[in-house]
Length: 256
Ligand code: NAD
Image 1 (cartoon, protein in one colour):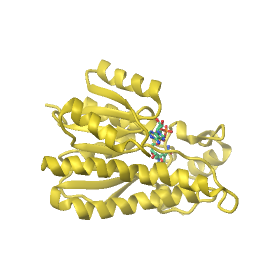
Image 2: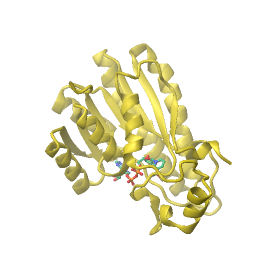
Image 3: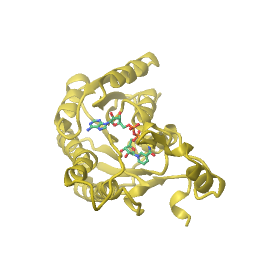
Image 4: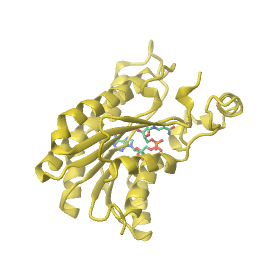
C-alpha cells in the first residue's frame, strides 16, 4: 500500500526543478497531485509524465501571486479534498540593494512570500473545514538565514517564509495542520542558471564549494534529494514536527 494513497496535494511551481521532483515522489506514493505553475506547456508535460508513470495528476495554469484560491479549488473540484500544500514556486535574479528599483524587491516578495501566503490561506481554509488536519511544506532556502550580496530581496523574502512557517504552525496546530519549511542549499535546477551562467559549473563554485569543501558533501543537491525531505514532512509519518525549518544543504551552512 502506497502511504499517500487517498491524499490530495497541490505543488506550486511543480512543472520543473524541485517542484517536479516533489510532484513525482508524492504521485509515486499514491497521492493525487495538482501541478500548479505559470509554465503551461512544461506543467502539462509534467502532469502527463506523472500519469504515464501510473500516478494521478493534473495541471492547473496558475500564478501564485493571484491564483492561490483557484488552484486549491481545482484540487477540491477534481479530487474532492486537499491534504497537502507544497509552496515551492520561486524566482531568483540578482539585484543590487542600492540601485535596484523598488518594484524588483516587490516582485520577489510577491512571488516568494505573498505567493506562499495566498496559497497557504486558501489551503488552510479547506483543511480547517475538512477537520482532518493537513500538511503544508514551504520551500525556503539557506538564503533565509545567510547573508549574500546582490540577493537581499530574495534572502529577506525567504526569511519571511520561514517566519510564516512558524506563525502558521502555531495558529493552525489546533486544527492538526502541520506547517514546516525545507531550506535547500545549492540544487541542480534551471534556477542555478542566473543571467545565462550556470553557477554550479563556474570555476568559483568548483573551487570553493567542491574542491575546498565549503559544502562538506562537495556537490550540489539533486532535486530528488530535496523532494525526499518534503515527502517526509508532508506524510503521516511526520506527526510531532511543526514550525521547523529542515535544512538540506550538504552541510553548507554549518561551515565557515
Ligand atoms: P525552477 O526555476 O527550476 O522552478 C521554479 C518553478 O516555479 C518554475 O516551474 C516556474 O514556472 C514556477 N513559478 C515561478 N513563478 C511562479 C508563479 N508566480 N506562479 C506559479 N509558478 C511560478 O526553480 P527550483 O530550483 O526548482 O526552485 C524551487 C524552489 O526552491 C524555489 O522556491 C526556490 O527559491 C527554492 N530554492 C532553490 C534552490 C536552488 O539552488 N535551485 C535553492 C534553495 C531554494
